[in-house]
Amino acid sequence: MNDDVRPTGPAPDLTAVLAGIERTNELLTRVLAEVATTPSTHAAFVDAGYVYAAAGRLVAGTEDRRAFELDAEGLIEAFIDKARTIFPDSRLLRVYWYDGARRRIHTAEQQRVAELPDVKVRLGNLNANNQQKGVDSLIRSDLESLARHRAISDAVLIGGDEDLVSAVEAAQGYGARVHLWGIEAVGGRNQAEPLLWEVDSQRTFDLEFCKPYVTRRAVVYDAADPVADGSGGVAPTRDEVRFVGARVAARWLSERGVPWITELLPGHPYLPGTVDQELLTAAEALLRYSLRGHADLRRALRDGFWEHVRAQC
Image 1 (cartoon, rainbow, N blue to C red):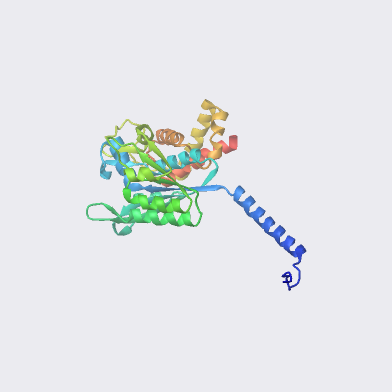
Image 2: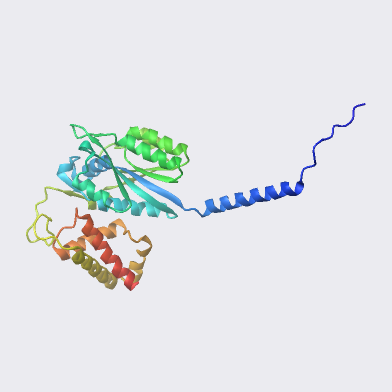
C-alpha cells in the first residue's frame, strides 16, 4: 500500500500571496485608468506633389506649378480644422508636408511652410524631369515609426500613389487607423484603387473646398482693385497687420454678434478654413496689399484677430 504523496517543503505564505495579487491588481487598475484618460492623437501625412497636381487640375485646369499659386498655409489650416471636427476627442501631433526639391534644399515656398506651427516639412529629391523621388519612403518611415511607438492612434494620409499601400499596411499592423483623404478628380480617379481598398476610411474634397486656395499666376490685376498683387508697394508691418486683424474682429463682433464669434474660441489658435479666408480677404481690402505668401504677416493677422476676440469674449 503506497503512502499519499505530501509536499515536503514549507507551506506557502497565503498572506504574502494575497498581498502580491492585490499589488498586481492595483498596478493594472492604474494602467487602465491612465490609458482611459490618455487622449487620442492624430497626425496628417500630406504628399504635396499630389495636392499640387490634383488641386491645380481641379481648380486651374493644369498640374504645372508655374501656372498657379497654392495657398499652402491656408490649405493646411483647412486640413487641421477638418481633422478637428472628425476627431473631436483627439489632439494633433503635427502635419507632415512631403515635397521634392533639388538636392533637398528648401525653396522659399517650402521654407514658409516649414515655419508654420505644428508643421514639419520632409523633402525628397527632384529629378531632371521634376519628378519626386524618395517621398513615398519618407511617408512610410514616419507613418510606421509613429504607429510602432504608439505616438498616434489615427493617421490622415493625403495622397494617391499605390506605393503608399505598404505604409498603410505597416501602420495598421501596429494598431493605428489610417484615413485616406483626396481631392476630387476631374475625370476618373487620382488615387490608386489598391490604396482605397486598404485604408479604414475615405474622404474627398471638392471644387468648392479647394477653390479658395488656388490662384492662377497669369491673373491681370486691375490698378483700381483694392488688393494689389503684392509685387509692388510697401509691405505693411506686423503691427499694422495685427491692428487690421483686431479691426476686422471688432467689425464682425458688431455685425455677427458675440455668440457667433465665441463659437470660434475652442479652436484657438486656429480658425476654420472658410473663416480664415474671409479674414484674409477682409484684411487685404483694408491694407490694399496681398498677404498671400507672407506666412509671418498672416500669423500677425490672426494674432490681432484673436487678441481682440479674447479681450471682448
